[in-house]
Length: 205
Image (cartoon, rainbow, N blue to C red):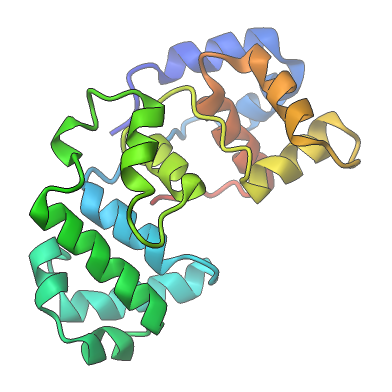
């Protein structure tokens, strides 16, 4: 599903920011897409932590043999040795089971996320072991399709901003925040296009 605001955001950013205008024009016909399943989105983010995209895809494919529908109840019921055999580390297997249990026992307010503001969703998610602010921000962008998220800790965003706006020099977090004030209320869209300037193939979570 493509966000309903995408074309409006593209036009607004292209008018305001000449650097983004060039990047946007270089990447026509593609847009942010949501996978649509909150548990799977968060599970994939845990699986992919600190490993390459290729390695994460391989582990995910093996996990689907353990939990074919990748539902919380399947993960909770799975034997730990099978999760480890699929390629998860001990820590990641614990994170994934904690996430699944929280979906099942209602300690995560998944049914209310669409109604909550961004910071409230982040507060809900970071109580899960293995989910920090960055992962929660990726969830806001890629699952809830929130338009105005600025993931300041994201290395790709930092790299793209340095390259396009600071001639490759380092940029402090506050400098990036100040720069991004011109992108509001479409900071997620600006970030997505800056990611595309580094890698034209969209990442999905």
